[in-house]
Length: 602
Image: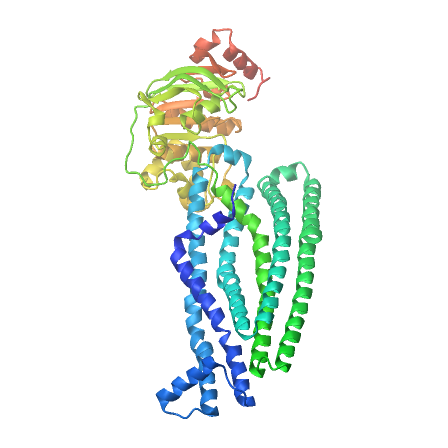
């Protein structure tokens, strides 16, 4: 579980610069106190009262250097020079030594962590994405990183330096009148104590609200993604009603718990601050009347104490802002602490390349997503190089799981998978996968040009290779009809392409990486018969050119396979060619009969 120290570690690569910039900002905040101090001393000079011993020594030193007489004019000149140094001279220095670094650190950290986040996204296990939709993940990332970015300049550039200013003010008052300093310190401890106590409770409310808002944003993302289904079932009113309920719940939490809590806290804090300011005024006035402090010290004490109490409001506001952002920052770190998947490939560019003949063997393979519910049991299957093998069976029989294990998305509970006699677990997962290619039932298409999508697996592919792959996949006839040909933008998720066109794009993309093993995972099950025929023609031209594994419900797709493997309840129950299996009274013949009579359409 993420903690506060994880937020601090977010900036750890810039520790030296952080120390310098915070120290500089704090020093400048303390230097500001010179102005009210010097103003008080000017008032003493004007009223004929003596200045402090510190200023007397400074004026004497200036007189000694300049050979000027120690008089009223020199005293005022020294004090004005001091104010000039800490205001006019320091102004340009402060911006470059503080705010430049505060935002530099925040923006560089933002850049660094966006890179780390992308790396984390690429290495998280597949089951994580089964449990978290894109809207939820994107919300955690964007909100977490942006809140980190905005929080650092406020925290390092304002909150910490302002606390140092308050500490400096306490020292100044202590040197003037210890009794007033004691009251000042006690009041600050009381105000900060109840502020932090209330903020701790509000942070928990913010954490709860963050979860509510994440659920709402997640549902919005689902509505956008599945808008065609929403419209098809005319459930717009239901979705609106459900989201309204979520918005109402968020509003009640924000207004009647969180916002009300901040207002109550602010009311109490303001009342206590004003009371303390009045008490300091009374005590300072009494000390001046009794002659315990000079008129200049009266002005200095009253001014710096007012400055300190004035800082309490921005300090508290900054603490409240941090409290509002705290939950989302923690949730971002919880995402970053997710363990990487066993299926994670290396993110470093590799020059090593494998080449396989395509001989694949499943040896005593068993697997279950849940240890108590096996999906595959003691699978033994040998696929020879350039052989075409079809996996068929009822839904849930384990066909797609077998392919996931082949791609090393999961590790088997028992047994092993060999390619050319090598256990695939001993191979570099990235280099190994580059020798495989798969065409899914739903081909993933990125929002870009058709050419970008075709060359996604091999950016070095020549245009002639692209054209040849498209010819084999029967995509060339589609490209000629597109307005910009290969440079046509296909839209988000390929919405400008039909299902059959996306499938042919997927086949061409797979062929361009020249895989040793090519898998078709239900590549025709969701297509109309015309599209299916074109895909089958494309697949037929590929058979025999490499090891090919076909997963299919429609048995018409697998008739020409060298070997058909029938799975049932996670076990291999039949193996043979199409004709051999039809001669047996088995599951394959029953499935074939149902499809032939039209009782089973997929």
